[in-house]
Length: 477
Ligand code: NAD
Image (tube, rainbow, N blue to C red; front, top):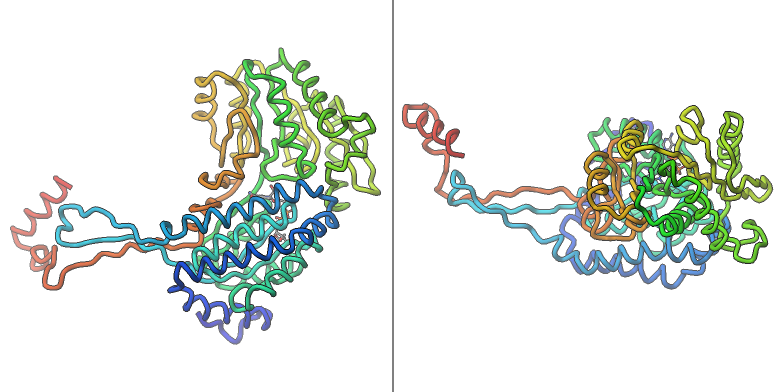
């Protein structure tokens, strides 16, 4: 791929891109050992500089160290270890059976690297969501240009340092910058774009990709609902949901966004949620703002956005059942549970992406399902309940990227499961084999024997014999 010299793209980006195109031709034939070596050096760097990663995240939004270890480092090292273990099998061409009309041929599906890739990542898990896709790209044999988020500058700069220490810019390169940089990169004819971010920007990425017919993986967001069935263990559900909601201070793409709970159990469930919050984040009754385990809102813009959601809800009649304290100085928002919410409120319209948890009572399971289906298809759906028939009903009658029964969020760590959304919450899947496939082209290869041709009898001039054979092909195959 040669870019036209008249192109308006920044010449520096063009040079890096062009050098990666050339490397991608060589990497098409990179061996298992070469790919594994690339993955191992990433793993070694992470091990050597684990404290630097923790410090960067703490500087960006006071992310607690245990959460950095659990949600930024562990998912990446798990992805690397899983990939190294299975890559040989994933890379192997897969033989397929030969249908009768193809008798005499043999066929295989090869997985070839797509080539040059662009990885654009968000701020909320800035290390994990940048290096995770890179692992899949390297496993597939792709080069990569990475554009991390401008909103977490400490982590983005650390990633730039890491990549420059491990790779030449013609292999993997980090381009730092704001939206304009992202838009300039999107003009380049990449072979694949892996984007993680909001649905609104996902649409911009897909439009730009269409210009070059570049394939995309879009890992987007949205409102992930929770249905608590009448037979659920409320204490168990509340404890799991409080952790899933408040890890990273609610700034998680798969955070439970709102809870549908049976109206007869709303009070009891609410009190279990309060107990769980107290136990996890304020065991000594000093205030949750004193907890070392609660991260902060990433920046003032998001702080104001979330404050706006609370103000809007309260102005329209919602009640603050827990929390509601805010400190703009430290960008602290106390875990806030809202009741008496309605669809006119922003909290039930927009992805919350913060520590606000609305509770929506329902009368029948059908009504809860209809409510979920009235909104765009979510990234994840969480169902709590003991009855497997009800669980099957919810799974069967709703659509979501992923679903979890009797827990939330933890499916992200399961490397055998495809991770991603559907329609508004995303296109394509990540993790393990599914991530490897996002960066691979499945090439079907058929091998014929010299001198043998299955369609000899079907060549023109088409006589009666050819017509008979075609008729039987239609009839029997
Ligand atoms: P965002 O879409 O604002 O930004 C993501 C990236 O896109 C950043 O690197 C940014 O610089 C770039 N960008 C922003 N505007 C752009 C534009 N107009 N043109 C080109 N590039 C642009 O998202 P965010 O605020 O960083 O992250 C929050 C969103 O990401 C939420 O919706 C969340 O649900 C979603 N998310 C999804 C996943 C997932 O795995 N599905 C994971 C994390 C976050």
